[in-house]
Image 1: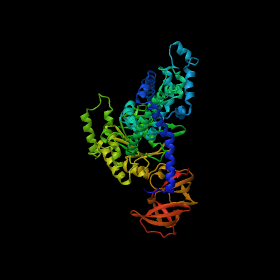
Image 2: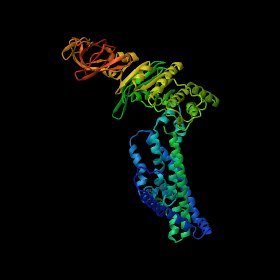
Image 3: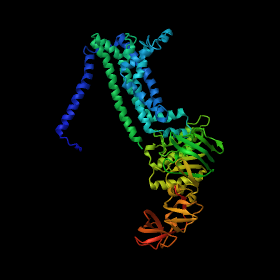
Image 4: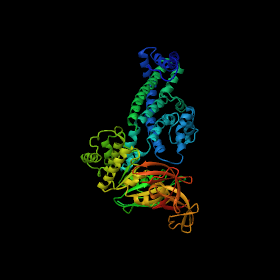
Length: 279
Length: 343
């Protein structure tokens, strides 16, 4: 191993690496291990039993449903917003860019409250919605709305820099060759951003399934109906059902691990792709 | 195909990119838009392509008004400065793109598209590279693929934005000749944008010289070089020496001494004498000649380049001899000069 221009002695380097690893182990790896240890503390059958509870299964189903709605929505919104921002010049562009970041800077609780104020029984649209027998708050639509709001930036944030860097030339070339807007998007723009888009979708999905704060405000915590997995974990934990809580939590943790692996894979593939197509 | 640009203007915010520009390209003509950056030449090209639209004025193809027609419907071939090849497609797919995106009733059969691609690969002299990706090609090869892609749709008009800008000098020269031959062989009408005057003078039938959103002069390479219409053209095309003089009653005065130069039809007042290094004759510091002090002398091609000073102004003169001594006083007479009112 060659020593770089840095002048640390081998001892100092080992100490630095050691401290770094210790910190990671203590604050990242250990908690993750604890989740799985607790989940299987009473053995495999208890774990399966905890997951198999009707309320737990309903929570898993709801989480998957919410992600299945909000991720595609944000995927479309994100691509449309990025397309508009990077391919066109218009008034209010910088405002739109800052608005996209809003969900990152606003506390999730506030995000949830916004929807309660808008659609709740005392909210702006609440009476009208109730009159027409539409239930938004304390129901699935509210949970979806809150999730969409919180996870909006992930896709857009990922592909805006990518599209900005690629510029408009490819699209203009396609148009000059007679391609329609849709053909240009499908054959030229989308292939150019596919890896970045996939990466954004992955992060968006992880957050959509894991979101707690905003969803907690609008959900109403009705067991078997409006509890997502994170909410269900909290309820079980508060009832001292540690095995149940950690069993469901371990599923969420597995999701995180899978996301991490896929993300690394994508980065590897993405980085490779970028290098190959560098001009 | 003929192109008419009629009184076109375009602003980007406060910046006037084009200001009442009119221009005509004849069928089969190879036209160069030459100017410094910010002169509006690329904006004008994009307007012909339908990638930008004028605030006022008209664009006509063969007499038909195309001002608002989008690029996709103009049947043009556009070659971008950095080629804009689709990086995820092979060379063959890139070339075929304009044909494969056609509506089904206009789309050639797959076999016909393949044949057309093979034909174009032959034309650009890259017959075996159809399966490669753009990233695996050299700059000159990418340039030719971009051209083949533009030609695949059999455009009526070929538009090129700085087509040789990103290539090294040798490749640039070869491609230049090749492009000119191709233009003649295919009978295209072509317009290309460049900031390189040598390229414009060598390649184009006529050169359109632009500056700050207006056309300074349109003419053959010879005309713009020998008879620049404005001080800007004189300065921008070729090498030019500039000497401030005064026009008074039909005479050209330099520090009160009359020069043997016709003031043409210029009104009295301060003016500027423009001459090219090869247009000055080196001689004695006699009355009627422009007095100079000789500086360094060096060989330049078939002639000698003499660096000299007129007061504090550096000038350069080409001469085949006899060579003056450094520091000697001498005088310049002129075959041909341009004289413009001082700005």
